[in-house]
Length: 544
Image (cartoon, rainbow, N blue to C red):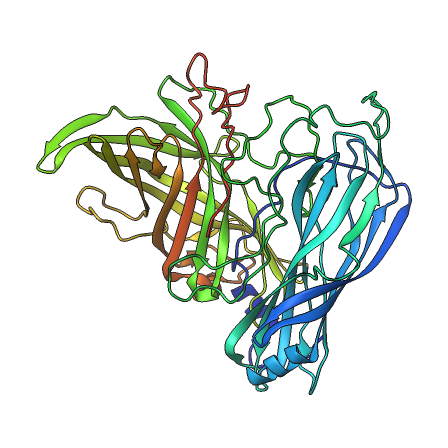
């Protein structure tokens, strides 16, 4: 959309420098639908209202895509040839001119509601665009393309796709090719409530599969289950947070469970569509969260899911911490009498777990860095030292207050990267040279490099507890320094300095959310905490 501009720095090198920019949620959970026989082509022009710097303005959003004309239970539905065109009015061009922007690069995130048999989940259709020059006067059309999540279903019935909110991230460049001031603009668009047409995109009939024995269009056995309350996922906000506080919004998540949402028990029939990640190699119907089952659980063992966001200050954006499994071995609580009252202290050991390794699941990063080609990377957070959860509760009945600190030695590893779809060989050992580090409040007791997260809790008997508690979970926050990288590159090409210059540095705010734990080692674990196969029932949702 925008022509190339002169530069003194090769674009390939610049793209490498951005390779690890922002982490993106792997497409999560919910229910499912099927393979195509023929193609249903969709070309929908929808009325939206976009919040521009000059105020709310009408806009047209045109969505084109190809769907299978029909499908069967258990087969993949993969919308293809998806294009989102945002036709912004002349007022948008005037706003860009006022910001001294000569070029824009767009990234879009369209929330799409996927529904079947009264159940619904949200998916995010993401797209990126080539740079385009800002015209002398409006309007301005921004055309983005990209892969979208795959959908499968375990029940027969019509599967509907409906367009929802649209987020548009704009990277702004001045006439001389340097970033404008500000360097980015986030535009939120919503369907026009006064327009005659709504946002339906397509309906795909899903017939029973060979082994379902279910009449076509019959309700799913799980129709009595409560529908997902998740709204269509929010979109990207490349503007970021400048103050090191609340994490900036990164690329949107797809179909996440809400806070405290329960996952169906193992083996229970699903009734809503399941949205799988659009990344290459993603399998239909795959679990949206990693397995979190401790085969060596003791009566004091807890298992839980964690997720969250982290800023990358240098890149003025936010990363998602993927839903990950953690095993916690509770320590023996102790009582200490201090001048302010009785304290109950406990230190527990913890470990990340993914397929037998102490790490998060590998996850895709997709990002737009000003002036760079679209870049994706596969990354992992790897535990290389101890992890602990230490809590200190002041018990002044009926008021109980607590502080909790999580300490973990984690390195960030880059497994692979692609620039404009072309593989970039980062080698087998690309990682931070030491663990992510935080300012340690008690360095004499806890030496060495490690991350520190802090959470507080409070309970006034008989009311429920609020804030963070080890068993019920909650929010933990902290700030980390991303160390320099080492081992990046292959074939004699050293990419360490490029990665280090791009993202390493201090002041990266983290907000981690832990879900309700599962007492996995009990003879009869509580079913409101655990699935039938002793995995955590609650899947937390990241919060900014």
